[in-house]
Amino acid sequence: MKNLGIKAALYINYFVFAILLNSVGIVIKQSIDNYNVSETNASVLEAFKDLPIAFVSFFVASFLPKIGYKKSMLFALLIVFFGCIYMYYGNTFGSTKVLFLTIGVAFAFIKVSVFSMIGLLTETPQEHSSFMSSIEGFFMVGIALAYFIFPAFFDESNPDAWLRVYLFLAGLIAVSFVILLFSKINIKAEVSDKSVAQDFLEMVKLIALPLVIFFILSAFLFVMVEQGIMTWLPTFNKNVLSLNDSLSVQMASILAISLALGRLLAGVIVKKIPWLKIVITCLIIAMVIVALVLPNALNSKTIEINNVFDIPLIGFIFPIIGLFISPIYPLINSVVLSALPKKMHSSMTGLIVIFSALGGTFGSRIIGYLFEHIGGGKAFFFMLIPMLILIATLFMLNKTTKKYEVAR
Image 1 (cartoon, rainbow, N blue to C red):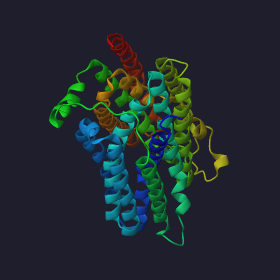
Image 2: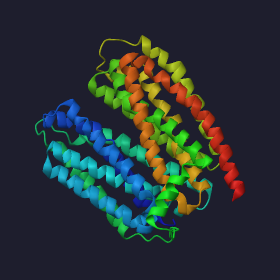
Image 3: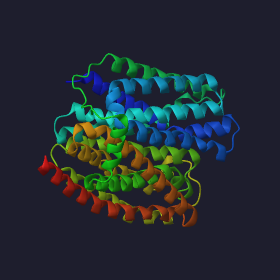
Image 4: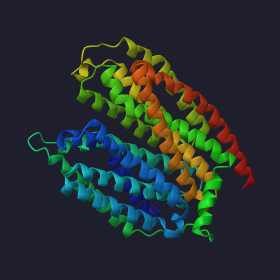
């Protein structure tokens, strides 16, 4: 297979960062238990993770092609490798802050580089969509496995045993670093002859393009839905379905698994079916699940459930919504990147990362507010509104994309 080494490195990079990024909830719990910090203080780890991603992406995306994507990814892997080692030996709440700071900074370099590299490694829009979907699917596999990898290192007799997971992750990072280091990139990125300041202004100007405006709206709305559900599903399982602490987290893994499966399947299906038909069909099915399945949650038991066999059917059905919402994000990313010249992919990816982060934060905050004021059983109904608006923006995105194809 052409460029096998580079592609393998991209998959491993995304897999490792999926585990690291989505371990924040586990690390918050461990920090409260092991380092005697309050819930409020522990929650700052989210900011140490998310803010560097948006901040660094905004400032480096436009000139990464000049640095080189391979060098950027090697630098990112090096940063997070030492972050994991420092976490293992530091074993303090301060070291968790350093860890997530390195993860956020490194992921900004990784995501911009990976998304831009996909454009270099594919030749047609169909290939781009397929590769984008499969690599995002692999990311979701990493998220799902995080629910099992971290607990595998837990030991009730040794409260520090869980830190060994960072030696395991550091090993994966080292493998990815070596593969990437010795991989040859046969296709070079198009590098602008403008200054760094001019490249940055060009990225900002992208926001004014109709294609980018409709994409930003679509990405913002989608991530609002996905992250809103993903963040609050464990709380929904506990507060609404009355599952115990362990089951509420474990059952949330069904969502991550279905998200992974949906993106991997989309990578195959998009080769034969237009992307718009796929995402609209998926959205309609997702809306039906919300409208017909959630009302049953209002009539669920109030007695705590401690056995998987006692979990109501909704506990298994609702998380499957991930199978239908998951293809949307990689497909719309691929559509907008394929429509733009490859020299603009790095800047566009910077915007993707920024507005995805904003959408996720906004969605999570809204669902959290609704959980508190109207109850978890009704909170997810709110997702029908952004889903409806998303359908409209997707049609406009498709229409605008066709104009760009004609122009080219």
